[in-house]
Image: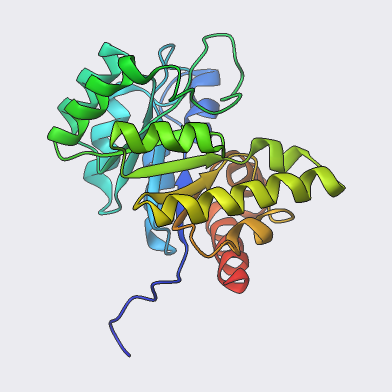
Length: 247
C-alpha cells in the first residue's frame, strides 16, 4: 500500500566520523562531513551517526549543528558518559544519544559499554537525556547481563556491538551470531528496540541484517573506506541493497 512503511525494513544509519578524520589529518575544512551527511540523505540513508570524542579526533563541536541544519535525517550522537558530553547533548538535542565506552588511547571503540557495572553512574545521565526528549541507546555486548542492565536503566534502545562477530570465522562466528540473534529477540520481547553495529561490511552484513528483530544498523568506517574507491552514494546504495535482500 502506497505511503505505508514496511515494518520489516531495516534502517541504515551512516557514521560519518571518518570523513572528519581525513579532514583533521591535514587541518582546514575539506572534506566536510556535512557534505557526506547530505549525500547520505539524498541516496536514502535513514540517519546520521557521529561520535564526538573527548580528544575531538574527528567530529568537532561545530559539526553537530551544521549536520543538524543540513539535513532532515535524525542525528544519532555517540557519546561517552561524561558531564561534558551530557552538556553538549542537552545543548544540541539530537534525535538519539548512544552511550559508548571511550578510552583516550583506543583507535576505535573496542567493545561494549559495561552498563551493568556502571549502573549508578549511568542512571542520572540516562534520566537527563530522556527528560530532554533524546532517545537513549546503550552500545553493549549481546549478553543477558548487559541487556538486563539496559532494562533496569530504562533505555529504550540497545545497540549490540558486532565487532567480535565481524572478526570471527567459522564456528566462532556462528556462535556469536546466535548470541546476537537470541539477545535481539529477548530485547524486543522486553520492549527494547535492538540495533547493531561495528565492523560490518558487504561480506558479513547479510546474516546480521537477517535478524528479524533488529531495527537499525549503524555502519561507518567500511562505507567511508569504500567511498574512496567508488563514491559514498554507491557504497550506501550497495549496503542498502544487501540489507534489503536479507529481509
